[in-house]
Image 1: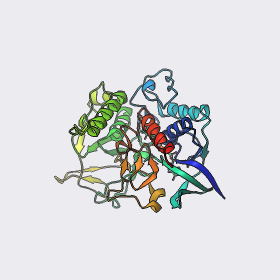
Image 2 (image 1 turned 60 degrees about the vertical axis):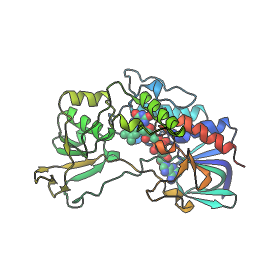
Image 3 (image 1 turned 30 degrees about the vertical axis):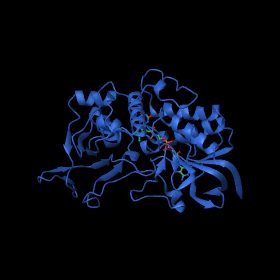
Image 4 (image 1 turned 180 degrees about the vertical axis):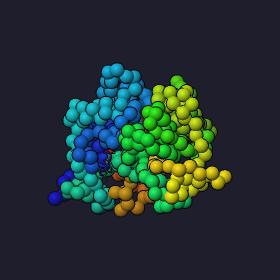
Length: 352
Ligand code: FAD
């Protein structure tokens, strides 16, 4: 059966919920289709010790401040899940959980959204599917030769799973630094942290709030035709959250350069030296989860869809929300997604 809605939002994580909040304010009729069985988007799957890089009051979606987590300045992932579940309920957002969208295609003057539980015809679609379901692994020689365990950030839970083992953590971003710190501070794991270039830590006082301000200033400068100063990326790659600081301070977080290849027993560096390992954890990032948009034929050579703000250039009825700076400054953060969601909802309200 085909149902009708002004707007279908694909994805019910923080970006989808922020979209719902602003679509409601525009008096639009919408539904949010989310593959997860329960609220919280990808926060439900983060590792046990993960904490936000900003205090709760700087990690809020529009309309409702995230409450502080008792006993800690930087809330854990479970606290974010509770907040998002409460947000969904409080604003009575129509989220159909357990509903995966397979395809969005053009259907005369509407977009047709095909999900496993039925189809929707909509005037507009907001895609807010995040990146968590598309972990990225670099093409390193020997991937299939290594006999130990290989996993990605998305599969990492806690140090206990690696007690007594030699683990190589690959990646110079936040996930790599935090997982390396988590393992190193535990004391039961022999950790080697490997990064492609020298790790670049942000100053200790820079948290998500400051990053949001920097990303916004960069966007404004670019829009005004000024030179690109590099924004957040110019400051560094790794937010110095307390565990990262602790591990670094204890001398446990020194990185080795990237190895040349994996071997059956571990890895080999360009100078011929080797390290044996029981596991390699690839903290090598994500790609946007956009396969449901394939029938629209919008993807450019680098796999991205070209946008003007959140609106897809090749399909004005489609908005992309939350994937990264290319869909709005800091739009892949709790504090940043609200503003781009507001702009997307306003633009959708103007559609004929
Ligand atoms: P998600 O949370 O991934 O939600 C997308 C939803 O869409 C999911 O429920 C998914 O199941 C669903 N979905 C996907 N495909 C489909 C489909 N085809 N059909 C239907 N549903 C679909 N941000 C901060 O502000 N502060 C932090 O401290 C912070 N720390 C981070 C730490 C890590 C390790 C990572 C990876 C990110 C962090 N972020 C942080 C960034 C960001 O806030 C999160 O990545 C956030 O989860 C992104 O929200 P989202 O709604 O865009 O995507």
